[in-house]
Image 1 (tube, rainbow, N blue to C red):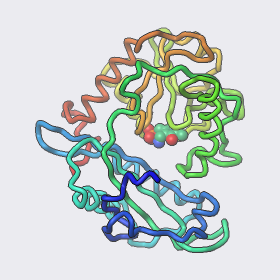
Image 2 (image 1 turned 180 degrees about the vertical axis):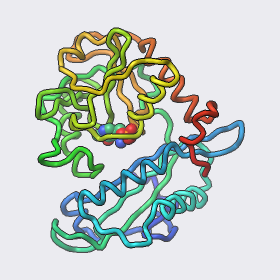
Image 3 (image 1 turned 90 degrees about the vertical axis):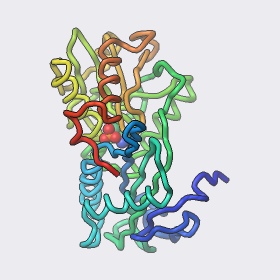
Length: 307
Ligand code: PMP
């Protein structure tokens, strides 16, 4: 068994405890039906100032609360964003973490019951070291998925729920089994949506283009940050609009963005080569992004929260 967290401390329902003591009932609604909501938050360690920073934790926690609201999960009245930030701080302190890391926070239904239950809800927070996702890869070779992205009229991709990753799993495993690194989904209108765990950007004729927030995507954090960095630092025009599949094939640059993946170039789609290397704009945006998250750009200090 993978026992990666066995020596760690977890924040479980408001209390710090050894990871092995945090237990759930296998018959609870979340374990039975995949009904849960969660967030992954990256934290970056600034060696020079010996300070750990969380990247946009308030926005992640806002999305967590929106996801819970959309699934009608009832949170106890004392569960506020500030309370959860304190939980994150406590679990990082308990594990004495001083490096780049990932905080996973999830809300689950803590009782045996039907898939229609509202609660009672429980929350856990875990923090563990995490570096780059594809340290040895220049970029990814992707295919267009034969699976359609989930849509707002069935299972909303706007909710960060564990069950949504069933769709990601279909697409990702199909891609892997066909020899690709990852996949890109189209939505129910046949337009480009997103990857299994990341939003997508394309560069065409000097413009940065990304599917709009009504294209069946998980809206928010890295995508919005990249849009602002491109506009404010590189003076680049950004379009949020419908994107056709064939536009990807003739894009000048393509890349995925997300909390976990950060910024990763896409080298080909359905064996149409985009670029053998990281593109110029992708590389500039990635450089700026890392400078910001690593506290090297004062103007963006308010994107970081000291922990
Ligand atoms: N789409 C999906 C399906 C994801 O899982 C993620 C990662 N959370 C993203 C997009 C990127 O979102 P964010 O930048 O807010 O992490």
